Length: 112
Length: 113
View 1 (cartoon, rainbow over the protein chains, first blue to last red):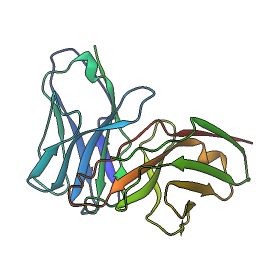
View 2: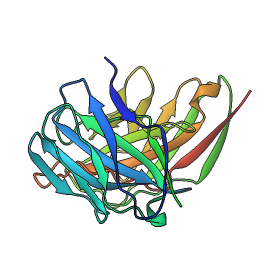
View 3: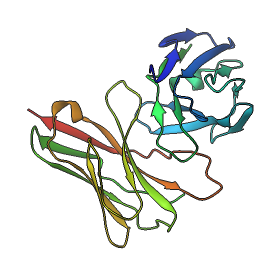
């Protein structure tokens, strides 16, 4: 199993550009989520999904969209990048909501 | 969500046991105690979790106070690879669970050779 994979590892965007952060898992997990981690801080939940076709907002959803068309993939879209979105983004998955979560290696995003 | 309190940092010597404390005085009866750790430049990694009884796994042990207002993560023999930020997190097992993990500041563990 590859576990949770994220691409790209690093990305630099200009203000106003859009992009999609990819996340995939091969463990047949129902629950997937996106977090962001700002320097020196803990992780904050952006969006989550309890299964294919179902998504919901976390605590910091503004400026981000998600979709879950398959069990394996949970992409995060930045609609119009802003410097405040400079952060490290982590995707996570678990067998079901409430179970232990497995995190990807992260995407380091810089918006200039 | 109930809050946890952890020391900002701790030091340990390699190959010695490490006891990482966590206070959670407002814990509810349905809250599970989870521990994750984050090694430098990596994503968080699940360590262990428990509800009332002490728990052991290949990575660590979790000792839970009888009143559940505190818990201790025990690394039996610290290695340099255990240097990380350790997060103590309460997870509500109730039906409204979003799966959200609330990461506080955690405890930064430094392991000296």
